[in-house]
Image 1: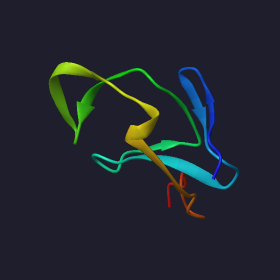
Image 2: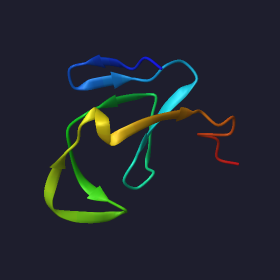
Image 3: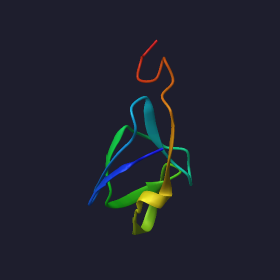
Length: 68
């Protein structure tokens, strides 16, 4: 696994996508790291500065992104 880290932008390996560890939010294969204002669908009292360590690479599911 080799994640490309370009400052605030991280890119998953081909065939992978990012999932936030805390709430399993699927962020997609490319992510701009910054502040998040919501976790578990609830607004935070204070924004959280996200780090690449808050995400993990997982395999892209074949039906991901399809509205079937």
